[in-house]
Image 1 (cartoon, helix red, strand yellow):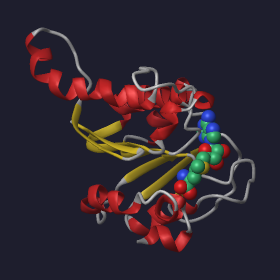
Image 2 (image 1 turned 90 degrees about the vertical axis):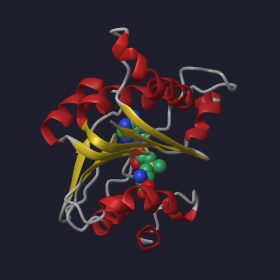
Image 3 (image 1 turned 120 degrees about the vertical axis):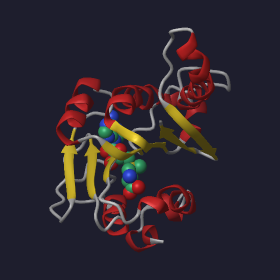
Image 4 (image 1 turned 180 degrees about the vertical axis):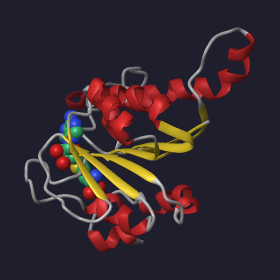
Length: 200
Ligand SMILES: C[S@@+](CC[C@H](N)C(=O)[O-])C[C@H]1O[C@@H](n2cnc3c(N)ncnc32)[C@H](O)[C@@H]1O
């Protein structure tokens, strides 16, 4: 898998690559528009970008957007770098208006639970295309105090968000009948530390 070539930890440390292949493989030859939150390299302007390069080479017809809170200098074909804070919903909506809608959004940013929720709320309904995927990595931070997590059952976490989405998948049938809305979630695929949320 390409992730090994560019040394992103998606293959090396976390073992996400086979899951990405499973869910995103069918989109490989399409002209997809992808946004990844978290470019890598933290405060370094020149480090990072391994996963953006992986996606650029994997999706040969794709446009690849990366968002990071730190300044990044990557000047390469089909890679577009944006600087901003994933907890800033106004910024994300503006990014979505200017560069979306996206077929794929990946949250590999701060992994702070409040940030994960804020980004999902800002982007999922309005800026992910129907049948597209919103992917949340490293969800084990849901149980870490320093990321705003807590013991199982804490709702304000990435895991709490995904549990609520499970209600949305199943509630849609009745929501229409009762005039209530549910988020447009077609399917949820949950694995160790990572969730793939497919939009209706
Ligand atoms: C784990 S690294 C991303 C790795 C990269 N996606 C890869 O797979 O090669 C996390 C990145 O998120 C960025 N980050 C941290 N807090 C952020 C925030 N609030 N908004 C946007 N990016 C943030 C960091 O600067 C860092 O570069």
